[in-house]
Image 1 (cartoon, rainbow, N blue to C red):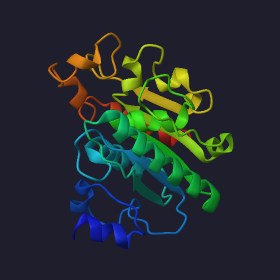
Image 2: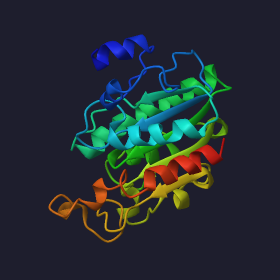
Image 3: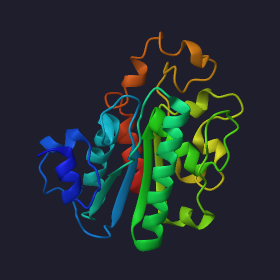
Image 4: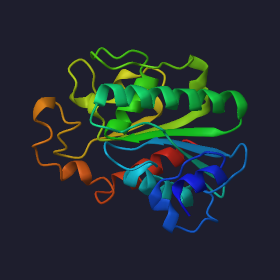
Length: 227
């Protein structure tokens, strides 16, 4: 079954291609109009449409921790291209519209937001309200939307590498207290002090370590504890 067809079956909620090999009777495949929990996740740069490998690992780790509640996954629809400012801004527009739609139409659904790498930047753009970085377009959500979001989990978040910003926990008054912002040791994308222009030639092994280094499980524990 193609990802496009599966998305139609699930009322246009796209699930990462990694999930196609998983059993479809797990709670994450719920097609309920308003699930108990919805995970809204933005993939990293150049990953195929879906939630990406970190997003899927986060969902897989979260499912056994939610006590049988129904879970649905929404993959932020955006290019995830190397045209970072336009791509991330497009992702923020999609994520903001979807989260606000869910808050208005499924007020009993608890949302969890997440993103990896550029996808973490997408989540930054909808949760910090203003971004003092040229070229990026914030899409702030009404303050009351935060009441529908239980947890935010971001990995390899580039805001940690921008002067004047920092981890989402420190720069978002509304979402910071419910956020876990994880940066692997040596990850050049989220560690301060590494100029953006030299990021790509650097060693990226730390940036690709989140599933193996235990941080995905740590984030799932954090998110589940906030239900």
